[in-house]
Image (spheres, rainbow, N blue to C red):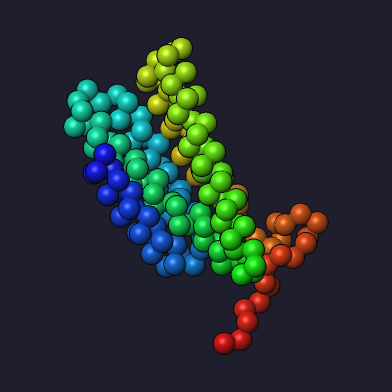
Length: 161
């Protein structure tokens, strides 16, 4: 568990740096990273050795962790200071719910079908994340435009410094 956890920490830090470099355009990080995570999950399930499974799992965790900060980038850059906490909480809540729902569902699928089938379904998550990164707002202006009824909750121009 130490190696994948270290890879997750490094991936999160690197993802934050990349997010800053790409000014919140999260698809530039998420699409390539999830394109690595999905096959790594499948290879992990098919690995004939423990070492291979750990290596593939570490690659999958690192790639997925690269996406953590880019997912936060647009809301953190776009929401007013009064709403950043709530916006962050919604993102974290979604991740926590997935963390509670996915393991028992995959366990039931592994029992009902096979271990390999469960990991193949798990690999759909990165594929879905990559597709969603292509269609979600990439900057404050498009984030603001995507709000329901064109309600403005985010600043539309930067404050003078």
